Length: 145
Image (spheres, rainbow, N blue to C red):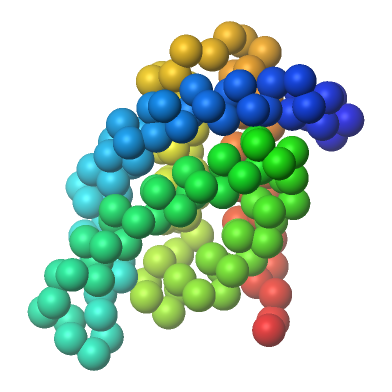
């Protein structure tokens, strides 16, 4: 973790800027993968025929994740990842989103980030660690409120 902290101090802002420059592309790619892979998540329980909630989830979930990554990188505050994942684990299952869906979105986001951004191998290794923090936090027990 100390190596990650050093990398965040020296490179976090630069990599955040690079990812933010490509943010729309990254999020659009993840949105398309969510739409293609998970057609039954986030159905509005009050109005199952209404696709608005599901379409909004497909679009906004990658954007929210992008913002969390930006905060973690720019503020050198990886603890926001765990807090976001706790919130996600508490809220989204009621809308049919399971851990497998969450894990897939994390993987797709970081895959797109590595593919679309212009970062070196050291930055890629650190992004791998950050991806692992998301996956680990999403694999833990669901805290009670």
